[in-house]
Image (cartoon, rainbow, N blue to C red; front, side, top):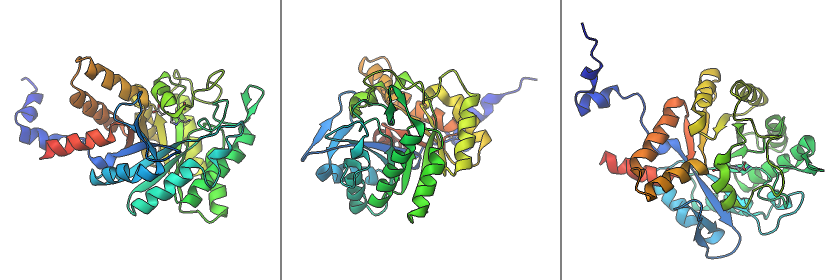
Length: 324
Ligand code: PBG
């Protein structure tokens, strides 16, 4: 007798009934890039359809995000001045701190996450404090703690350290707690790979290292078990959510993380993943909507509970369209 899998694919109704995963706007977190200045909404050439926003115009995109039913944003800042200790990253009047306050003022519902790192703020472009040409882990922790605290003070609901220094989750948890921010959550970029897929982001955030690369702190793409070890340590240190980044080339890591820990798993579908689909669509080689949604669905199917994606707005619109 032939075993017939096709029975459950016969009509749209039965396919809808047996579908295991569905994308909704609840799944997405939208990254927003904020710059100093006034009246700025400038398209980012490496990230089509994404913009550099000045604080005064930030409400426009915040409202759009809300209207589409997206629940969270992650804010990235481009400071006017960089220096060797990245001091604008933890200044109370820093760009992200102002953006957090503005977002909270604009929307009382939207969940505000901040990226905690130094690479956009240091003149050398590395994610920490340099000793010669090596990033000093423990001196960087002090700064990372200050950055996280300044974001919490500005009103962030959750901080997301992306620097890959050892011990940062425990360090940040402690700083937040002793300052009365015990309810500010930590989403750790636990398994952040040293990936070539970050290219368009670095152009957008002006954050490429001036010399060397990030191999002494970001993970080797060849390693999988090491990612699980990093995730274990972050959960142990108090991470509320762990993240895998990038997403599409690391679906095995997302799946492994989901099977291993019982905290939510976030996946960051990074700039290069977005750019490839955009470019392919522009060349007329692929159907953008279908490919982008399939890609996001695959990340969810692998085990992501939430996805940071530059497609958050478009995908939410497409999903709405399809559900009409
Ligand atoms: C900051 C940071 C980076 C990204 C997110 N946070 C860049 C990097 O590590 O070089 C990349 C995001 C993307 O490519 O979309 N450390």
